[in-house]
Structures are given as structure tokens and as C-alpha cells.
Image 1: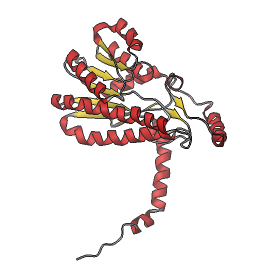
Image 2: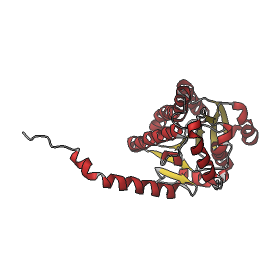
Image 3: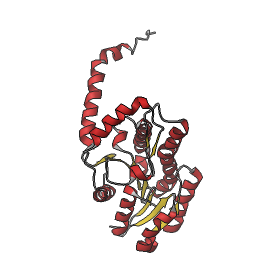
Image 4: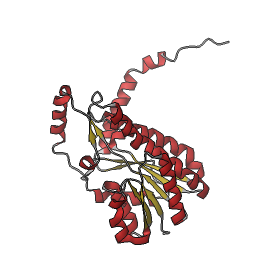
Length: 277
């Protein structure tokens, strides 16, 4: 198998770091980006010229485009582009401030959009490539006290599914990666919280009690799944990581279908009847 060239955002920690290391371990080359390039130094020390560390804040569109061009200048092409940078804002919808909500969308949604827009001209010119976008189980179902975060991931899902239908003719493959809960420092390391309101304390207590015994996944176990998706001749549009996603999706979609079916007669009436000429 020919060595692949990866471009991965958000490689300072967590799943992005795991995937970068997995690619490097098998002999691929990786453009590893993070807001702090110092966090990437261990990769450089271990893998040398196989890794190109770049400082990048994905909310800076010009910087994203420059990073893609620097990657091409170094390695000549890109085979796998992973838009992984993101974080969570925790808080009820009423609690989330305007600056917090806007910042959440700037990183999770617009950061993804900028990576896609920067990479596409190069991938189209190549006639091939694979774009992976890190979404979440929270892009398929919702969790109380994470409404703005949920909204960004639902937006990312719509953006990426549409992308897949637009670029298939160019030989570009697209995969939405939807992780469940993993034992990383994601919550403590990059997440932010809204100013709590007393009205939602009881809800928070219930959520905390329900999640107390939740089994988290091993981040290292995601690496073979990502490599398998990248190596697949026909990779999936959607890929859950972990055991929680599929049962949750089955339950959520059963409830949605039940509601749509129950109200279908009203929906049909809302079609109306235009007069024929």
C-alpha cells in the first residue's frame, strides 16, 4: 500500500492525536495542526520529517488556506483530510451567552467549512482524496445542557452529507466520524461552561446521576477503525465510534418516525390543493 499524506486539525490531544500517531506508526506522513505548535513537538521528535507541525486556529480562514498550501508545498499532495478540531460548550440553551454561542459555531462549524473549502481545489485537481469530519453522537441525538454544542454538530452533519453528494463525481470520498464518549481530557482540556442558572440545577443533578456509571471508550481503540475507513474502497458516509451510537440512533429514529406517522394526515392536509388551469 502506498504511503498516504494526511492533514489533521486538532492533534494536540485526544482522538486527533491518536489518529495522527496511528498514521505515522504505519509509515504514512502527517501534517499535524494545533493552536499550540509546542504540543506537537513530541511527534516531531519521534517521527522526524514524516510529520509537518503547523500552528493553526481553524477559525482563521486565511490561515487554514495557508496551512493547506504549506502541506502541498511540503508533501506534494493530500490523500486524507481530517477536520477534527472542536470543543464543547456546556450549559442550558438559556444559559449560553452570545459570545460563547458564536465562538462555538466559529470553531466547530465554520472551522470545518474552511478546512473543506481550502482542501477541495487540491483534491479535485488530484481527482481523488478522502475527507473525514469529526462529528459526534451529539450530531445524531441531543443531550440536555449541551444545546449549542449539539446544534454545531447537527450543522456539521448537514454540511458534510451535502458535501458527499457534491464531490463524489470528482473522486472524493467523505466520511462523518461520530464518536461516543471516550476517556480523553476533552471535557477538562478544552470544553467551556456557561454561567449556571439555579433553574437548571435539578436537571444537572439528574444528568450527573445518569452518567455516573457510563462506560467510556479507550481512545486508542479508535485508531484501527479510522485506518480501516481510510483504507476501504468504499468508505462509509457515517461511522459511529463506540457502542453507544447505534442503539441511541435506533431509539431516536424510532421515536421520530412514530411522531411523523402519527401526524402524517395533518402533514398531508398542509400540502393544499392548487387550482388547475
